[in-house]
Every structure is written in structure tokens, then in C-alpha cells.
Image (cartoon, rainbow, N blue to C red):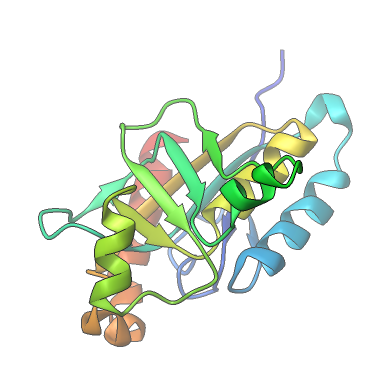
Length: 184
């Protein structure tokens, strides 16, 4: 029996800066479209029976003041999809994906860089954290039959502090790299 390989997926090189060298790393670019395309292309190169476990690492905004540190979400939602409207028109729309091995937290993914407290508070009614790629990575994995884990480190509180994200990335990347070293 062979060990299942791990593909580490990150939106930016800076978020993956401290991934241990033994891992294959895929840098997707920022946002749902780039993430979905890159993960789909990468997973398609593997035979169906040998797809890697995808571990999406990255930063996230906390939607509640008490959230800090590292999270492994149990659920991810596509927060800027009008799923309810699409379903009312007769079109299926999936806006939630459950993930095995999570810590109970919920991640909201959208193409909006959340720094507005009003949007943050709206999202906080449905989720704990917000990012820009997690749902797309998970959706590509579901479609192609690959196991997926999302691992997010809080870099800001999805308010004006989010504009300082570039200065916070390296600290988050170190913690994410250490988590990978400990868990895989």
C-alpha cells in the first residue's frame, strides 16, 4: 500500500513561503476562478485512482473578534453566489461543502476582499472566517474525487486591519508551514 501524496495549494507564493520542501506546492493566484482552474488542471494530471490529498493553506479574515490563530474548517460556503435565487428559478446551485476532519468552524469564500465592517457582520451570521479561494478549491476536489482539507490562519479581522494583510502574511505562512510539518 502506498501513501497518498499531498498537494499543498496556496493562492500566493508568500502564503506558501514556509511549506516544507518535501511537499508539491501549487500557487493558484487570488480568487475563486484562478483557484478552481489551477486545482482542476493539476488534479487532472493524476489518474483517478491516485489523486493526492489537497491541503489548501492560506490566510483568512476573522469574522468574530474572538477568533485568532489556526483553523481547519468543517464547512465552506460560497458567500457571493445567489444560490437561493438560482434555485427558485429552477437551477441547482451548491453554496456549501462539508469537509472531513475539520474543527467545526465555517469558512465563507468570495471574490470580495472583505474590509468593510458591514459586510463582515453580515457574513458573521453564517461563518467564522472569510477567504477568497477555499470554496473553489473544495469544489474542484469534490468534482474530481480528491480529499480536501482547508487550513487557514487568521491574518486580520475583515475590517480596516485587512489592508495591512501584506505585512501579516509571513507570520501566518510560518504557522501554516509548521502545521503541515506536524500533520503530514
